[in-house]
Amino acid sequence: MCCPLGAFVVIYKSLNHKVAQRLAQSGTKVSTKDTKKQVCRVRGEFMNLLTTFNGHTLSSLGWRYYFCATRKKGYMKLFVIEGVDGSGKSTQLNLLREFFTREGYDCEYLHFPRTETPYFGELIARFLRGEFGSLEQVDPYLVAMLYAGDRMDASREINAWLEAGKIVFLDRYTWSNIAYQCAKLDDEKEQDKLMQWILKLEFSHFAIPRPGLNIFLDVPGSFTEQKLSAGRHGDGRSYLNGSSDIHEGSLRFQKKVRDIYLRVAQHDETTAVINCTGRDGNMLPPETISGMILKSIKDRKLI
Image 1 (cartoon, helix red, strand yellow):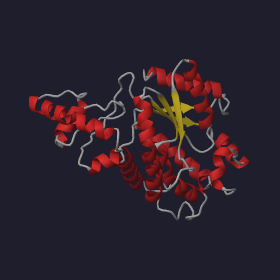
Image 2: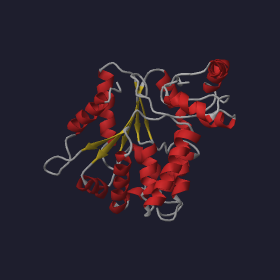
Image 3: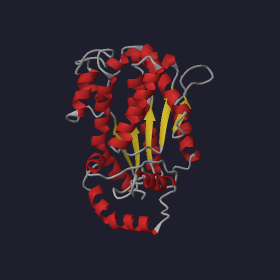
Image 4: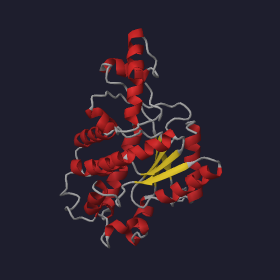
């Protein structure tokens, strides 16, 4: 059965995995009378659980999930801006929110990681300050778990917004976890192994909603270098307590992160790469980039 949130497909615990997979891939069509009875019998029970528990709790109760992306209009109004550090994500999110608000849409916004929140957020802040060691010293699987846990904690709020028909904009999401953690590994097979582990952890085990579109801002290397060399400031960086973000200390690392993003985009139809470099090799104006993002959203008929 398709979840009313529209971001993923949920299959009930009384169905075996193969039936669940067929239901998801066929757009919730049910082929047998017995299966229809199973779905109807547990539908009410499931809807009550959905409003009370998150996906992880439901999994522990024996419910089966099978996820697939749906392109139906009105579904998956969840848009993510991705990019290396200092790529202008906040600027583009503000422009997008302003545009859709003027058009009469109800919009919500979240920035990840939420370093101001307890448990996962506070541990991420300590990691970024370097309290647990350098990039090379901290296992990327452990770091990936922290970032995934932060999104799992926020997923109930995101789902509620989507269910209410709102457009949700996110500054970073799962692809950030993949790009930044896989960039810490040199072996491509190990990178792919970690990538699949993160995808399974976030979308299957934690059952967070899948985006309708991941938008990667591919900015000129000179722009990134200028931004990071000049130092970054603002209220959103209070988690550093005067320290530096360990992810921003190496341009070589930022280039590896970019390479992972581009490799992911080649194999993921929900990711759009926005080339932010003009003919002169410099960064395009923010308004031009925003227009390219809006075109990508409209071309995919996601709004």
